[in-house]
Image 1 (tube, rainbow, N blue to C red):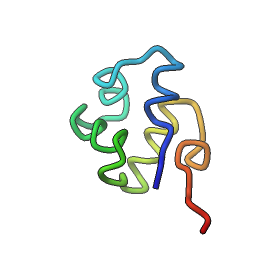
Image 2: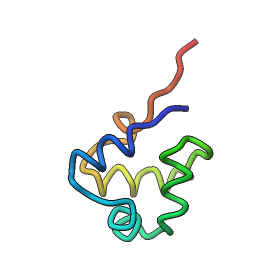
Image 3: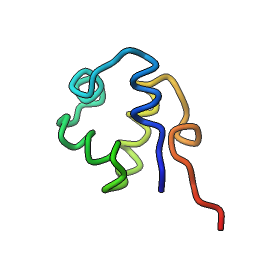
Image 4: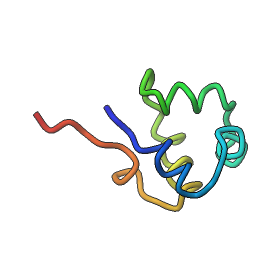
Length: 65
């Protein structure tokens, strides 16, 4: 599943550590999510979306194949 975490974070002029702190996770975990190596839990996805002032649907791109 692809995501727009890095794109939206950069558009809001936030660093990975800043966003991670706002979400309440380690920045290393945020990196793993940004690079698409893991998918965050529903709770974490919601917190990331809220921190970036967007929706989960806008944050994650689901392959509809």
